[in-house]
Length: 180
Image 1 (cartoon, rainbow, N blue to C red):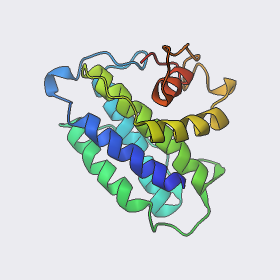
Image 2 (cartoon, helix red, strand yellow):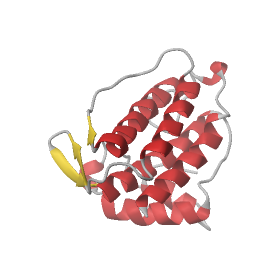
Image 3 (cartoon, rainbow, N blue to C red):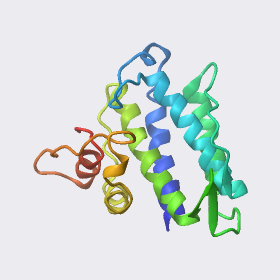
Image 4 (cartoon, rainbow, N blue to C red):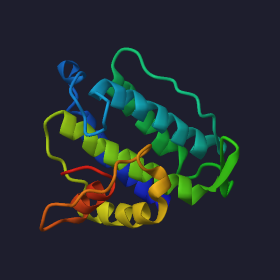
């Protein structure tokens, strides 16, 4: 199930990447201290790690960055990621550094990361692109299970109050410290 969510998250994010223009790379993002170029670099590393997890059953944890067109490289990595997960490694566990995680957990956490950063990209480009409701509802359930106080403030900001009435997308983003 989580691999399906990962695929849906990547598809959503690909729609945000078409908004990226070279003149926007210096724009601020909802991620503190990151401009759009830094966010795209981070996403490139994340998608490479997720593809390795799907292809090889382990993640090397080495930053790669990107030269030239970061959105174009990210689109290519997204396609590699989509190819890596469906019939990939038969391992039920993925090595991440010294830890072992269930393959479904890695895919679920990856889906949260990919979708929320897809939203961040759209926001940095000046566009409102809510995470689609069925995807957002499923990711919110996962985020509530996976994200705890130990993840804050390093990976996520403190939760914020969502606008009212709040859709699943608004609640997901608010739980992860973003205002929609």
